Amino acid sequence: MNLKLISTAIALPILAVAIAVSTTGIFTPPQVPGSHNVLHASDRIHIPGAVGPESLVFDPSGGGPYTGVADGRILKWDGGDWVEFAVTSSQRGFVFVAIQSGNGAHMRKAIGLTLPYKTSDLYIADAYLGLQVVGPKGGIASPVVTEVEGQRLRFTNDMDIDEDKNVIYFTDTSTEFYRRQFIPSVLTLDKTGKLMKFDISTKQVTILLRGLTFPNGVSLSKDRSFLLVAETTTRKILRFWLQGPKNGQHDTFAELPGFPDNIRRNPDGEFWVALHSKAGLLSKWASSWSWLGKMILKLPLDFKKLHYFLVGGRPHATAVKLSNKGEILRVLEDVNGTTLRFISEIEERNGKLWIGSVLVPYVGIYTL
Image (cartoon, rainbow, N blue to C red; front, top):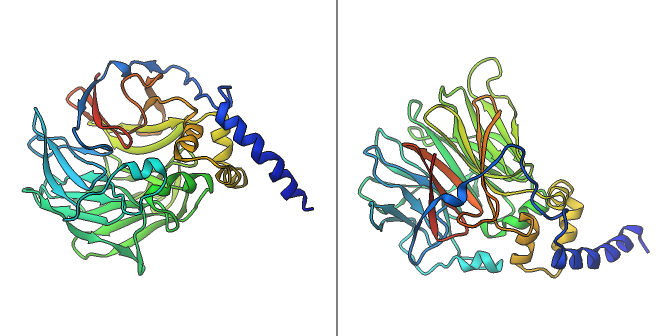
């Protein structure tokens, strides 16, 4: 019998038992040197009847934030309640529980928002429907980009806009996996993701980078000289140069202690990176070696157990602030997930951090 088959046959039941019962250090999220366990002091604004406020944005007058939730609606915080502002489709009835059970072909998620101050149009990255836009009065959003090179966008993720050049930079995480399949995408080390540029005036899409491993959050530098993109699986932030002698080239901007989601620039030109979770030793191995990840996917484990494995068996929240040179300046945590968990975006505004998450029914607010 093939030695690889024998090894797999032996390893699978061992992994299954280990994942099911282990509380050892190979699963446990690591401690981050110099981090501050303070995010449990955050306030929470609950969103009745909805879950998954992943991305947050304010309008030119300071209104909001606006956030997209799992059923395709865009909600606006009016200071006392969440009101419906827009929807990415006239259809309704999509439920977020689909992602928690690992199925549900119709689950949608608006996972990236940006609001250019010149027009006040709200741009939306809908994981299943592509880039969309809605005017300042809200309503039903209109499609902007639904396919690239004749292939429909499969997993539209995040974006940022350069108002001076009138272009949107955005990511399509995979040509093989949908949003609901994000765990297989990570564990197989899928490298079909792209970073792209959409010219609003000409309606042309340009592919800037191919072969990315789960490209996720996007953010421009303050001087517009480079663009950052989170590569979730590799736990890295990549820098794509837009100006200067390295124009068109990319390099590693930062390496992180966990799986990065969205990136947002603060008023000082620094960057807040939300980690979906820190990475324990085994999750590092699984997201580094595709053979191990594929082996784990063969185990009789549902979404919850697979997610438990990736996040180290314990809900938690980690926010990392980076300098404009990629240095880690500050790490804030809710180590035990008491108030916040699985955070996806951090928007700094007026001395507060507004914090979103793809898996919870509330937005967090932490006062710096």
